[in-house]
Image (cartoon, rainbow, N blue to C red; front, side, top):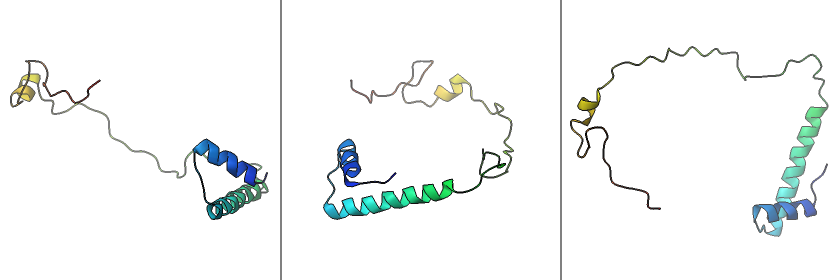
Length: 96
């Protein structure tokens, strides 16, 4: 597959772009170079190579998700500038 001016025009229309001629030519060359690199990768023998799931063999050693140092509702609302006994009251920020 090669990229030609017709494909560049279609991409411009889809992306709602208007490229100057020099940028169109640069894009044409860049896209064709990318396709050449992908075609080169297709030449490699990958027989017997397992699919790669992760880039590294590092194992995630995360901590357990444990609830700690909870603040009860009364203490949380104690210093609130405006509250109704259960929730913080804040000014409306979205106008629909």
